[in-house]
Image 1 (cartoon, one colour):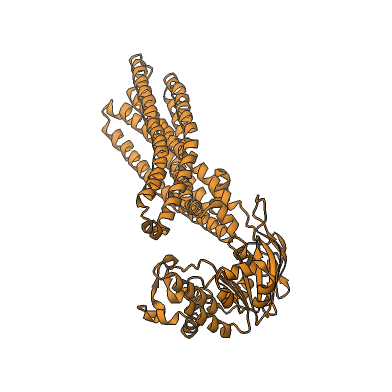
Image 2 (cartoon, rainbow, N blue to C red):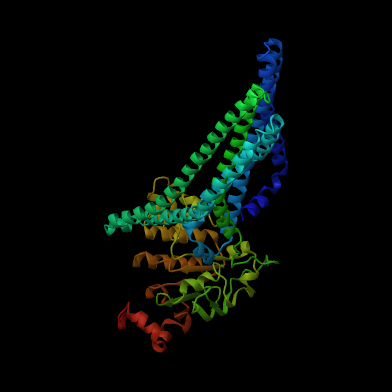
Length: 577
């Protein structure tokens, strides 16, 4: 997964990668040549007292060192830019894919997990790429080059390397194998911490209202402790790796000095060569150390890459049409024929055999008990979900064949839980129509019965709105959401229990103003409150995902027991009549 992800998103950056590889190669070659020059200075300059030789080769060493520094700086520069571009592109790809998801896919992954995958998981892959460009490219060159140069100095002494390198490789492999499952558990528990924290921040008012602070603290403490335990286990293994490697390194250095002293004593080796050999040994060990550092990051990056690919590899159940319809007659006629919806793996469908027709200039209401599928039914029209059976038609065209932008202009939905974005009142209202004038915004606010309270806000249309609209009341949030849809001026208005937070007087005034504003449009209202829908031209009664009645209020009161039970649970017999 990791290799495939990197190969896919690094393909556009072949030239910078090739350039940094060349720079890393040059600076590594320079590093490998310096110990040999140092050995020559010791053996041919220092021992013989030739100052000119020392100065000449010392100047050459300075020049090679400068070349090494320049190459290293260039490699790090291009490596950092390429890794940052990789992170940017992967984040954008994950974000774009999540934006294409329907509510079904978002629910499967969960919002906290999607946030973690878009941020922390991508960051881990980006860090791996950065360390690869800055360390891992030079590590094999330095390791192989160091071995070759060491063999060139003294073949018998190089036998120490034959024992050192395999021992290091075995130690690193054993530790890395235990790291992978721990890193997977760490990412999963990080998801849990994000989920608990998100719930507690969002539900802060509920927590305070029920005085559940201590309970929520315990929940977070448990999630945090679980993450800490896995992190400590990972840290213990990582902490073990460096002492093990350094122990092998120090023992090998002792062995080199011991055997090298005997070689010098026997005349088979010079002092400068031993110094250079020790330098090459350290370079080989540093290469192994760099590889070790990379191996520590690879297991976590692999887990993160799998989680990222799981998002990128998930296709939305709401698929854009191949040859979209880009024009309609713009009459706003809505027809649902035999529609059904079933979640994957569910035993029973949420909706089955739904037939509904809503015409321009009429108000169609949908009512039913909790869980009867009212909101799901409305979600089929703007394609929050796609019907698993039947058809949803707008002006005679299946919504699955419509261009998404055309469908968004034609259908305006006020959701059951209105959401406002961080910004201002004006920026939220213009979400549906960026070109709307201030006069249009005030008109929409007036119809939505929100003008009065917006005028009282400091700044009016420019008054700040917090994320989620948490700085306004529930009723104000609903009215602003209704105004946002009115600014859009669609052909079909869908109100999903959008009046539940309003008092009766505001509800009545709003419905009266809406009746004038949407006189030529198609209006579909989902409501629990009978007073909101009793004057509708047609009322659809849902029960357990089926249509069990359709007609006007008086007809349903006389003929439909389900509707009658709902009405009499809210009104007296006299009020219902």
